[in-house]
Image 1: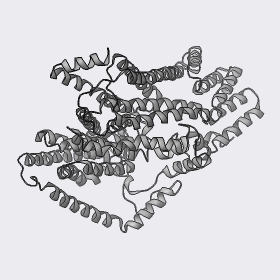
Image 2: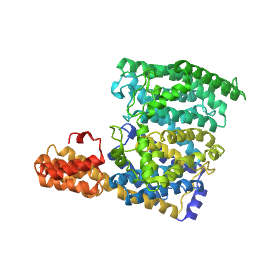
Image 3: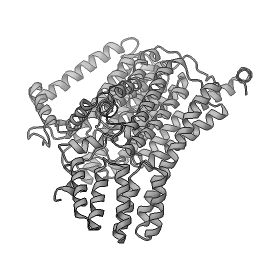
Image 4: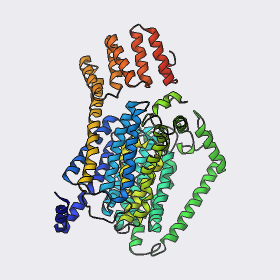
Length: 635
């Protein structure tokens, strides 16, 4: 259908039909939040067999939407982020020419392509005021669902949801679990402060905001706490009516502050302790709901502290709270400079343990392995500051240079990861993608319609995501990365004044469909390869022949993956076929010459084939790639 014909039909359509069409175009970003929610309950979607189907489905949907013409036109403000995404994806793909791990780079490019598509959905479908508000509301619902699910675990006394004293459910990683409930918190508070909503609705939102804050504390995430503080401060700064937002925030935070000491601890938790925490969180939520509802009723009747006085009252109240908090901190820790110095010493010391006088929680210690991750990243960057070691290939220099016995594939920081893997060029491109949308918040704040309300929640969520991703590996956790990137995409438009979507022309649709189709073409064999390898591991217990057929298929579908060959070699060794096992191990080292595990398998195959000299050479190669590997310490 020609553009002119579409425009003519749109003008002649009834207002109701146009409203329904506009509402339908707000659905895709919210659907992505639903996908992220589902991934969260499956462990975060970290495993390729979890996120690759999402990448396939998203790519296929974008192709179909482009073909049928159901794609809103990308607006001019979105072009810088779109260009940054395209350049980063291209640079990451080009790094395949010099990467130290082709397998890791291939997987990284596929994952990055998925996040690219997520951001494009935000850029195209959430660029309008009402669509942005729908996304903010969807984000608030996402946070409420996550907080409620964790609260149910607490009330049930489910100790399986914890590792030691820290929450480890549903993602099995405390910092990501904190992000699930704290990234949506600005949206919950922003809507709770929205004057047009009824007091009971605002009170319910206050309940979930307090509940999210309380259950998030059980994760004891220091990076998450820093990101949350930055996000809430940013949201207050963004809000046009800062007084109303600040009072609503205080009403949500104050009850949680009163029960915060009960939500954290160092000892392994028991069922009774968890039920007490769940009850305390619920009481704090109900109290917050009452306070927010009361404020909303006073707001509606223009009673004190409103009618132009809310800003002064909020300033005085928050000043008092901060003074009391500072006093309590000084009474508990002593001199701030001494406390900070002690935490810094813990942070920079390898294999450090918390000092005996520190707080009785993870929040009171600076112990972390991030200093080691970042040190290796910096040394890797110094070796090649322009190109890096290849997108996604941090594990190779890490295993070669690490000073602690921990297996990681990401340096837990988007800055450190970009410097080590894609050099200064990659860092600049990632910075554009993450920071440009935040720079557009000012325009959205002054935008028309409901943008001023929507941008408070979305802007705070964007600040949270970018801040915590500076100290964590959130890009590899789709349950958190998908909400983060769709929010950044929505913010990048900077307050569009076009509330009804204009359909994209043929050129834009083709430019969207072509890379989406290309992504599907690359992700499909990778997913089928992983699925075949997974089936082979299951079938190996009952049928060696069936397992080997699956592994042959997996190796052919993904010519960069060494995993099917390593599994094949192991199965053949157990089956007594030494020569075939040796051949498979050799092929694995050809595909992944810097994969230390491949050389370990080759050493075992050489030893089984009665070739001790070559086996020793393979062991030495493995030791050079991973000197601290426990499997190699006695060889």
